[in-house]
Amino acid sequence: MIGVVPATLPRLAALVRFLLQLRMLLCAMALLLIPAERVTNGTLVLVVAVALLSGLAARNWERFVPYLRSHPLLSVLDILGTAAILVLDGPSGPAFLTTLISSAVAGILFEWRHAALVVAFQIFSYACALLGYAAVSGMDAHVEVLTYQALIVHPALYAITAYMGIFIRRILTELASEQVARHSAERAAAAAEERERLARDMHDSVAKTLRGAAMAAQALPLWLKKDPERAEVVAKQIVAASDAAAAQARELISDLRDHEDDDTGIPFAQAVGGVVGEWSRACGIRAHVSGDPAPAVEPSGEARLEALAIVKEALTNVERHSGADTVEVTIGTAPDGGERSTYSIAITDDGVGFRTPPEDLIRAERTGNGHYGLLGMVERAERVGGSLVFASPEDGGGATVTLAVPASVGHDPSPAPQATM
Image (cartoon, rainbow, N blue to C red; front, side, top):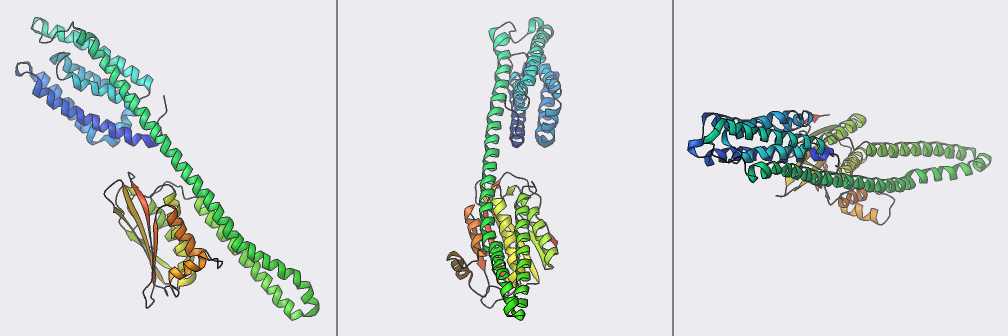
């Protein structure tokens, strides 16, 4: 039996909720189908009680299902309650269908050994219910007890429904395992691409800076002999280049560490708020995060990693080039009517804006001008099926970077942070 993957539990719980709701419907149908002369006060009370308890469990399924998995003995009480109905209504009455839900739930929630024990106890309770019904009804029994259906078919149905539950559980677990493996593969691919980007950035920044410092250091002895004043200038250039290389290396290491820490399991809106808050405290620029992402919508896998990297790069550009005093980060979602939605992040500053049109800057970076800032952001967005839009008023006065990435329905993120840093 395949162990339960944590991602499977919400699906199993939702399926149990559906079965409990189905039992409520079956209880109502049983009351309608039982002939009026056979409906006693005891039968009415028991069927209504089972329906109400099923409804309460279905309503509070988030707490009920984990509690039932931790305490399988609760299934015994459920089985005894439904067996009591059979004592009054008989083994072949409409109420029998309500007892099958217990074995199905056992197969879905428990390991096959525990499910087998539950089914064995249910068959034992069913046999006792047969004897009880025969003893209570006597010669006035409305249902034959010694029949092939009552003695063979009905007990077999308990085992069959439990096996169906186990089979469904196995399928859901395998699907969840495949999803986990796919997400892991996506993260591994994203990590490989990130290593390539860091290698390229290191070659274009730290390596070039150190190469220039090394060439200047090689020429320094000659300048000391020929022109001491020029040697002093070269020495200062070497010191400045070394400081720049150290700063670039620290930035790359910090960027790498940030990407290693991205998989924290926190809601994406909260992750964005943390990135913006940390950036604001480091550079002293006021930043405010607002917005109301739709519940249960969250970027997943590679889209989450790339979106966070784009947000960090956009904030870095604001710090370096905009001269802004404040930054507004707006988070939102837009469903498309299916299981996919769009997660959007707009970063607006009150700085000088783009002096050169963004499309010209990106075109220059594509031709190899030694810079990769905007181009890298665009490529990250395109890699995950997203889009990136740069906007700046014609008269200056700020810039806006709007990122849109695909998101999936089915998560439960916390509300977006509403705080000023």
